[in-house]
Image 1 (cartoon, rainbow, N blue to C red):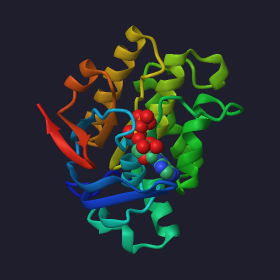
Image 2: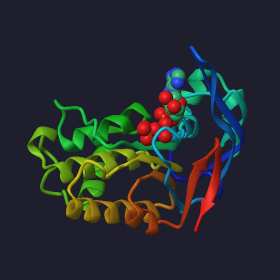
Image 3: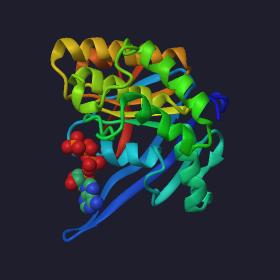
Length: 231
Ligand SMILES: Nc1ncnc2c1ncn2[C@@H]1O[C@H](COP(=O)(O)OP(=O)(O)OP(=O)(O)O)[C@@H](O)[C@H]1O
């Protein structure tokens, strides 16, 4: 369990996804091609309703495409049974959402230790990594706090640390600082970028904020079910 995957941890080829609705088939993603290289941070700047969540779910193996391929570390995830996909998701993908989704009855450290232990890491090693990650996010003094006793920025830092706990190859984030005030969002976002770059994680980060998007390596948007490069 380490970030020793391929140079292109995530490759999506000709991915399609439609939903059945009362009005017929809604073709949300028609031909998605995306390659995320290790250490590359890509901004997904997509209008509401264009298929951003659908794309992130497919990339994170939470959903299966109707056509095309999603490859994680060079393996075609579509060819794998659900339990294998779950294991890959657990070990290779980190998720950060707009709201922290931390377990309220567990401390900051425990929230980071648990996913590691589920992935087979010993408690001792998991705690050591959890302490390191929290210290890297300036939370060395908050390890024993319950999420409810942390500020919004601190909660989101713990959520980011948790997403990185299993040394994922791919980090998927949906407005990761969207719930924070502008100043805190700015600081936490920079910490997120620096942690992701430091660990050579490939990241796809959805944001509506052009200033945050400008700090990433490249930008893409969704148009007519396809990914288009932005300047
Ligand atoms: N399970 C579903 N069944 C039917 N339609 C769906 C389903 N999930 C999403 N959709 C529709 O597909 C389109 C894309 O949805 P998606 O949630 O991916 O958009 P989004 O870009 O993430 O939007 P937002 O930024 O508002 O969350 C929308 O028109 C949505 O209504």
